Image (cartoon, rainbow, N blue to C red):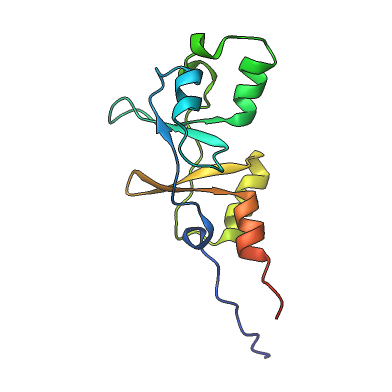
Amino acid sequence: MINIPRKTPIRVRDVMKKEFDIFDGMATVAEALDHMTHVETKSLLVKKRHDDDEWGIVMISDIAREVLAKDRAPDRVNIYEIMSKPVISVDPAMDIRYAARLFARYDLSRAPVVEKDEIVGVVSLTDMVLKGLHQPRP
């Protein structure tokens, strides 16, 4: 029997973004856009309203499709009207290979990283490929 050495898995926590924006679903799209604090933000996480509620997410593509393309006023559209809820989340200890498979199966581009019912980051396919798969050559 041949022993093939196993590579150390790259975990979601190793590639996720730790800075992200969380908004109330009642906020307007205009308010959310005004308060986005992270330069590379392509999604907005939506707070739970109570313990039995679930996290939500709004992607920049949702805002483009549901507000910009439909010529709706961003100050008259609430986040809850265009968000996806519940969201599929991933555990920070998950191997990025399995996270990529999950993303492919459900056609996701990004997801919140949840540990003990709290969001600790956001991971995207881009993060997994560029930070996880791509290893700089010497």
